[in-house]
Length: 94
Image (cartoon, rainbow, N blue to C red; front, side, top):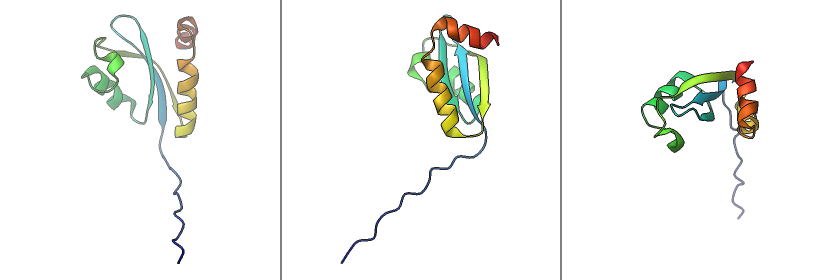
């Protein structure tokens, strides 16, 4: 007797997804993505979330861009993380 094949359901996300850059208290930049930007920044400032930010609080959003699809936001996050500091500053200035 054959066991039935498991089918994967498609991963669906709905809403607006944001890629953001925050500037830390020490002047460094952190890039991330989220479905709720305000909630994520509050979480960062409470010391929860990214370990990188824990000793560099408070943070302030200096760049944010919304995307309709989760995948596009993740791809944009990867591209921004690969930028140099000068390139990030140029992006923030736009």
